[in-house]
Length: 264
Image (cartoon, rainbow, N blue to C red; front, side, top):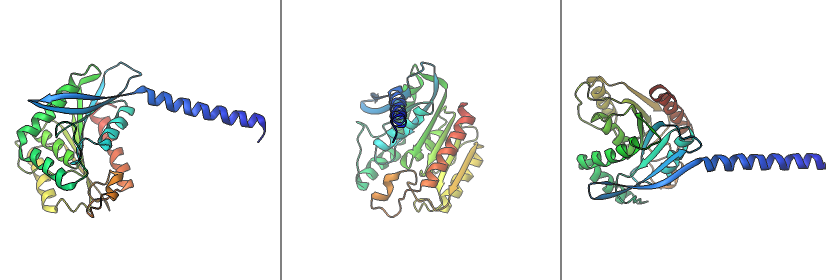
C-alpha cells in the first residue's frame, strides 16, 4: 500500500472512531431510584444530552424477566432517536431473573394486584413527565411480553398517554367503557405466538371496538412469542423465538406510529 493511501485510511479510521465516541458520549444514561408507597423502584433513564431542549418521552416496560439489559438497550435506542426514554421497574429493587418460574411469580403478582401495578406504572409516568427534558404533553409507552400487557392495561385504564405499543404482549381481558381510552394503540403480534389464542385476540379487538378506541393490530407471519429479543432462542423454551424480520418491521411500525402521535 502506498504511503499516501495508508495515511488516508488511518485518517478515515480515526474519523470513524471519533464520530462513534462522540455519538456515545452524547447519550446520557443513569440509574434512577424512585418509590411507589414503601417500595423502592430502580429505573433506567436515557437521553441525548447534546441538546437541552424538551423532547417527547417514552416509558419502556420490561418483559417478565425484570428490568434487564434488553429493556435498557431499547431505552437507549429510543434516546438515539431523539426521545427521553425511561425503562421502568415493575417488580421493585430493579430485580431480574433468568428462571421462568420466578419470572412467572413476579409477573403474576403484579397482574393479580392491579392497583399495585397501576401505581408502579404511574410512579414512573410522573417521574418522566416531570423531568426537565420531557415535553409534558407528549408521552407514550411501549412494552415487551409482560410489559406489553402492562401498557395495554394502562391504556384501558385511561392513563393520559399519546399512545402505547405492545410487542408480543399478553392481551388484557374485560370490557372498557366508551371514551375511557385516551391513548392510540399499536399491537405488534407474532402469528405463531402459542401463548395467545385466536379467541383472546377476537375478544380483545371486540373490546377495543366497543370502547371506540383508535387501534392497530399488526400480525407478523412466522413470528413466535418474544420475537424482538435476540436472546429468546437461547432460553430453551420452545414457544419463544427471535425473528429478525418481525423485529425490524415492528420497530419501523413503532417509529411511524410515533411520528404520527408525537411528531417525530
